[in-house]
Length: 554
Image (cartoon, rainbow, N blue to C red; front, side):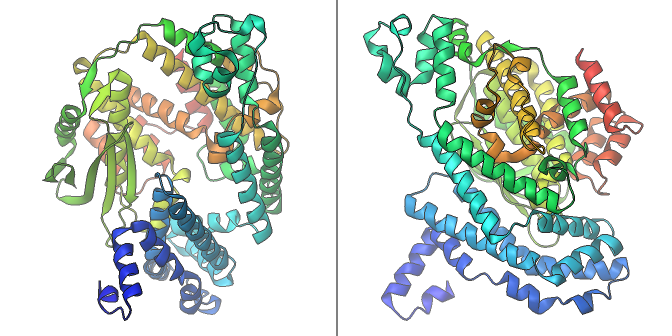
């Protein structure tokens, strides 16, 4: 506010007031004022960093880096959050420019000798969180691309996404594939409402042809874009001494190698399910009458159930509450209304720096068992993300390399759903079809992601492994899978965390309260391997764990 009050011109005053009212404008202004790279250069120099020889000195420098980068990281998280929301074109352009500015700052800082030196010293001489921060900094260095490659990559990703979102599609069916209903006329209906056509068309061959044509509607844009994405990522990996980008991405994960990740997907893969072009027809014919569930009741019930783990809460308003774990303040949770249940961590907790902030999204009425389970998972994710506080923001932001947080949310989801099982309606046949298809799709996309980011795309027909149908066009399979571009090679992690959390609940050697503290709080910062040893009573290699999970599924 002082900046607004001291404005010397009406224009400046009006702009400042608008910025306070409009968080997008405020973020854009803050982006223009970022000085992380220059501040880092002024604060750290390689000669002084060479004096880090013990854990105490490493912790001091790690804390100094945290002070310097906290504001930058908060802005970066807010930009990512708002870019997922509906925005005006001007607002989206402002935030995209802000994102570019943030990326430029990271690019500058990761090229500095002092940054590499600090990362190395923290890894060698740091303990616990300081060492983990050094590893996270090293990952930023590995992910760095030249300005040219970065521009090419972003252009290819944008081209791919534009092709899928705006790619025109029209298909005039032959006489045998036309639908006579005047409300479902052939060409217009297939070009604009493919799902309606697939559910109405009784001829499977017609459905199959239409679905396959729709999948490759953006083929011309997609093929070139995916070649560029693969080549840039492959070159990035080779430059760092790895065979392919998949090996680089898996380096810091529990599975560590492509072979282990693929073995998990193959060993735990569900039975084949209906081909995608037959799902709409099956859903139309299945009983789908779902029992409505009041989300307000479910939220209050979940809050009550969570008290056995030490969770306490204070309602600050009808849609705003403060969460505690025993006597420790976790942060504040805003309850928002939306179409589908979700949780968004708007600000992670950083030890001695800031408390967590999150947003739990719910519809007023949940439609059936599946929607209720989705809301339970969103609630569990809120507790999992707000319970574990990091000493360094960068560790919270690089959660794609941390299986334990998502594991905690999945474990808690299972425990809460089990407690509420008798109070929730049974799943309908339609929901069962959707759940089976969703699981098969997740496995299919995950194995495609592993294949695509290898030295050369594997070219294996994975479609026939997961669905009751044939689609031998492997290039088309890659091009139709948007998540390959959006999420990269580690798509399998969601399935891994789901399977592992179920295995833990079935075999844990400690009470639920003890498991909650270990998984959600993790006070001694145990690694995933150490957590599993504590939870299951003995240590497991990745291969042993895969075999045990697969045995349970048989």
